[in-house]
Each structure stands twice: as structure tokens, then as C-alpha cells.
Length: 219
Image (cartoon, rainbow, N blue to C red; front, side, top):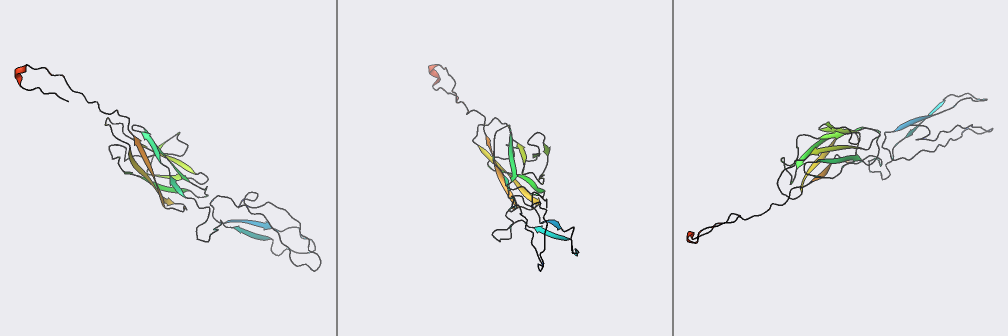
């Protein structure tokens, strides 16, 4: 525990009046939104007058709260994969985040799955990961939200084809492999927006002699 942020930093002088055998020291504890393991701090006794100190240190332990007693700590984060939308030929960029800061690294595997979009519409083999807001990207099949951070980015390339088609979708799934989260996985949906014009229908001109009997037009 960090004195001054997790628990009050206090220095006090205790006076035991004649006939008194105990005193109390009360410290304020901070109820934050950070997921953390049990934390310890000490209260140290010193400079006794007219007495000796036989136990100079008391240990305080702060546990993360479980207000509804369901066995799940309130501040334990939930992992989520956001949705994404891009025009075909561009990257679909997903934000993968936790809703509470954690003192643990949260690591997860990444996997795409086809939907109405198939392997011709996006790169099923490569996922890019960025931990610096999109400045640099690394190809990976797993990623980590490091302790103290709350999100990373993942991106998947889409294919710029020449087919006029409606919006198509695929998914990106993150499955937790290390670190404590309330859920084991999360899935985000990407929508690919078409950029091709609708096909134009034409008919040709035909000239025949009247004794040909028929005229054939090509559409």
C-alpha cells in the first residue's frame, strides 16, 4: 500500500493517562476504482517515555472490496472489444479495453472469424496490435494491456474489390489468458462498407435489313 494515496499518512503522539491500558489510532483508507491485490502497510511505534516497546510495528492489510459478497471484487475489470467500421480497402480498427485500471497485466489471445464477410473480404491471417495509440503496429496473435493502462488497439486489413455489394461483417474475439477479469472473453463486430458503384445496364444499337426477319439486341 502507498502511504498518502491508499492510506492516510499520519503521525500522532499517544499519551496514556494513569490507569489507561489502551489507545486507538484511526487512519482513513482510500476507496479507489483500481483493481489490486491485498496491500499492506505498517504503523510503527517509537520514542516511548516511562515505558518500553515490546512490539514496535502493527501491520495493516487493505483488501479490495466485494460489496455484494458474491466472491467477485468490485474493482475487477471487465474486458471489452469495441465495434469498428471502415470502407473496404482500409483497416478495421478495434479498441480493446478494460473498464477499471488494474495492477495486473491483462493478456489475451486474438482471433478473427468470418461473418457475412469471408476470407476474400479481409485478411484472416494477420492482426496488427498497437500499444501507443496507433503510432506503431506489430503483427500478433495475442496482446497485453499492461498494469496501469486501460486499452490497446487492434486492426485488420480489408480488401478493396470491384464487386458492388452491401455492408459485410466479421468479428474479432479476445480471450483472456492471464490476469484477473470478470469475463473470460469479448467479441467485437467489424462492418465493411462497400465503395463500388452499382452496375450500369446498357443496350446496344442494331441495324438489319427488313428481310432478316428478326433483330437481336444485347443488354
